[in-house]
Image (cartoon, rainbow, N blue to C red; front, side, top):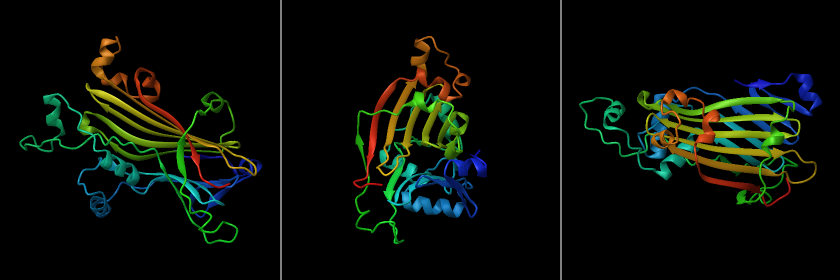
Length: 289
């Protein structure tokens, strides 16, 4: 559920609502917008099948939902959507998670069908967000030549100061958007969401892929981004990607519960999942924003 500060609070922070039925606002040179759309209908799903060359999709795909953070003058746009996330899933093509024989039948639409799971039905994605340059012909927004350099993520030693972000700073805007979800035929959950909050000093977001295959394994792939608003200089945009994974039997060997009900909130139990990949990067735009 989105939350936006009142008009006076936005004005005091130098922000203004987007208006025109759009959810979000402008602040310190950024336009931040979110949208929650309906689940893909059959005609849209057929179009996605053609584009992605697959007939496999999560039970609920919110194809019109998105989060966009755009720096107006430079055209640098950071955005999150289900199509790009599923493109990453398709390209990654992980092997399907093996499940016990009894549970495997539950993934079949008809128990009499001899269905072989030859694709990643968990829809695990390596997606960490999309970044590009949105060219503008408006005066004062820079020429296409000035914006021709694609932004790149480069590894860095700097880290997001999560302790500072936990301080009680005024929140001007908050929203959580579901991009896709699947209950794995009542055998767990596969969920991709993005949350954003904007403060007077900057914005922070969390893209989270959460997978629990009951009795088998759990995956948590978190992407955090943080931008501090800067005056007359290039803003520092950091991205931290952390992938965690553990098998239920491993949890049991360490004395942790193995009942699925004990693992409904990934934010609470993330510390029990070993880190298998971690990196921090900085967005390099090649120009002053």
